Image (cartoon, rainbow, N blue to C red; front, side, top):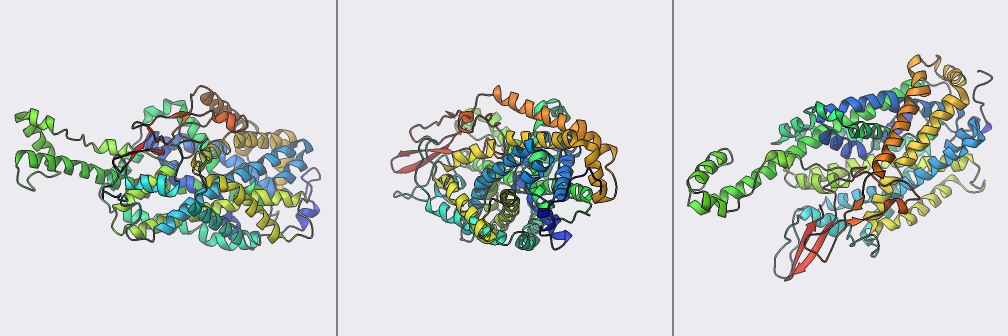
Length: 595
């Protein structure tokens, strides 16, 4: 072992180890592969030229994602400490980088487990027959809702019970409190004995989503419209690569998807033996993470293609019924297949009568263009698509169990990024069992996360979602790579890697650590801040007073410790993920979606 290499500590010698390599890899993969792989990556592929988006995405993976992942796994494994201990060992002046990672992990765990609680709420309701979001509730006049859908009603009213704005807090929603308590209880049970119980849980949480995705893939490819959905997703639009925003989103997506800079990966690798090929681990985890994103896109957009096809046929059938009644045409004469010929013929001979019918414009491409990500995809678009599938209850249960497994395995990394640094800093009293300390952290997190169970909770969650996991992580990662490559020294770091893996890093890794990766991080960070500084930001709010709801200006930067505002499509915000407004008139509930 080189004398100038990173020193082993007593903490490292006494540190527990993984039972086997499989548990370690599954835990890292489970932490990296989260709900964003299912509801964020396919959305980016859709809006950024389909297959063309893979070019900047793979470039970002090779030159930014993998070098950062390799660096974190290596320093954690060599020092066998958490994020704060690692950076303090390199330089006492860098301890703040570890503290920042821990704080970010804590803040992310607050809202991330709230999303898991939402998933649990939908999972509980998926066992009902019929599905509760498949039909509108009736009022005293036995009339339903107008200008809204059952899935929107169930999400915004029965799940969130959303308030008009952030200033109106509303009351705690008891069903959300129970779901959140359940989510944190499950996390605690899986985490009660540290890596000993995590290593057992990941055999299910890290593998079950792939089984469900495969089942969905087989079923989705047999649905009508699946082919159109896949063609729409993967047809490349090379011209869109000229847009700088594409490259910016690709870089941020691969960065956040790999879960670097949270501190969780450093903690997980610190339980490894020092004689372990962390280079191979980094490449394996990174490739599996990106392959999962691509693999998940296929069933997701096959099902969304089915939804678009269903909506298209429903639209045409409405027009067919109107034409049949107006011109006394025999039933079944006008079909979806010959609708265009009938329409052209009738419009040519009776243009005024056809015009008076106010027929809808039915275009399959328009329905395919109705993209969504984040909660909009999971709780609105996808739930609506599931309703139309045969055996909808089974598919809903499978879908939300999959999301729960993805969220739970990611929570392991978030919580590890909090607990390990606190243990390494000796902040836990010696008399306190680890189980009790973990319970205190989980209870504290649950109490703080109750803000997301208020009527205004969704607004606050969007603030956390858009800010906590963006600029802070970019800054942390930039200082991480500068600290190792330029402060600790690439030569000393190469000696440590040779000690651990048996060979020195090749020229590719060295060039990435020294130049390419920090330069890409700096460019992404500056571009991100500049882009947001030039954007006037609003947030969608439920407005109970107007038929046509308006957006409400929100000074997000003043609510998040001076960090820049979120991008319009950041981590789950999309044009379909909007709150809705309500107007009462003649005992009929009317909901309007803020556009």
